Length: 109
Image (tube, rainbow, N blue to C red; front, side, top):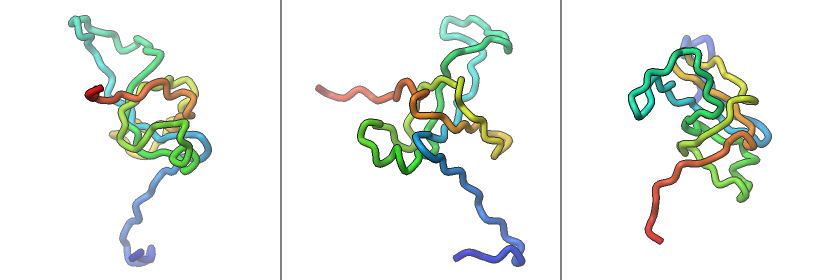
């Protein structure tokens, strides 16, 4: 049931990527390497990780792209479009070509 704006309730706003794009929530920046080296704030990392929030309808129907909601991915942020949606979340609309890897748990072969 949807309520009219006059009742004072807020509707949830959503972001749906169009075309061959996915919406990704960027993981928090790491300030220390596994070896214990502190990274300065100005270091630029060419690829970053995040979780898929949603995929476009075009991607979800395309078997060439085995990427689904909640997948952890590695992506190149060069063409990513930041979404100023929630102050505490870093959301990006990313072209599927810039998603370079999907992290999967190893299975028995």
